[in-house]
Image 1 (cartoon, rainbow, N blue to C red):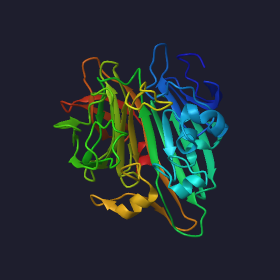
Image 2 (image 1 turned 30 degrees about the vertical axis):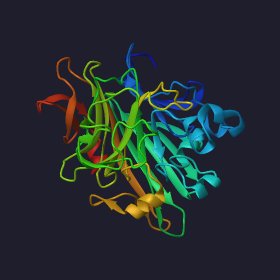
Image 3 (image 1 turned 180 degrees about the vertical axis):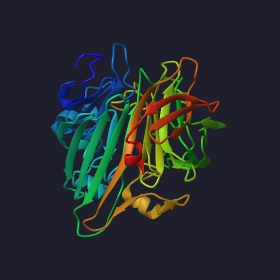
Length: 393
């Protein structure tokens, strides 16, 4: 499809040698892999437009092609390496968010669960005013069935996403459901700012492999968390300390009119983010890797900020979250009854910012629009979103 053409597109394609699907209108394009189900590219159309999602410097492969004898040295041991071999952009963590237990790993379990290492089935449909992608994947180890649809309308830079998890067990299933959205260069820089309606938070108990930016296992009030040596770190700021990294969980405010995460770069005049229901996803796990990890495939080269919204505050095992129960009065796990299912809706948006508007500090939802608000509480831009209420109410 040529730049400026108003025709909607939804079709199979290839992204860096890997099977994918394209979703596009006259404003934006999106790429969704079938290998692991990652959303790897979302940008405005036209020359010189930047993809805000993180694409690793290492070459990715289809995760089922991972051979421990051949690839462990490059990507790491199977529980982690199989995931990292195919990882990019926005990935789905289901039914784990974190490392598998020893028993799960012995049965082939991987970091963040099965969804990110399996082949997804995809299809595309086009209507008069919108284009849609549809995906599904079966998770035999957890006995879950997952489906995702993405819809893009003419004249909008908002993608409407609906997901359903079905429990095929004849018993209640307790699990984790997290959207692992990660952003990287050239969009990501120390000029970026994160916005979300946070309340209380907790830093990751295990730390960060000896390169912690934050003190471990500490509670804090958003957005200031205790620094590893002294003082506080403003978690809204990005890539402040090279050679350090962190993971921290933040509770979404129950009284804020919109649940969202957003990262903006005023120098690039670009913002990207998500709007969702707090009832579905009450937590945001913040992850930052700033050239800290030495091991392969990281090799102290990657710079990433993750805004991982979902059912759990931190990438801990299922058993750890079961023992935790609740944190700050919010549940830390999702539950489905026997043979039950749950559907959620959320929005992915990208926006061009005004030249002198600064960064995004807040988001308000109109009847059919997403309003990006600056530090001075003035509207920076308004994004048309005609189907907003259908997905968030």
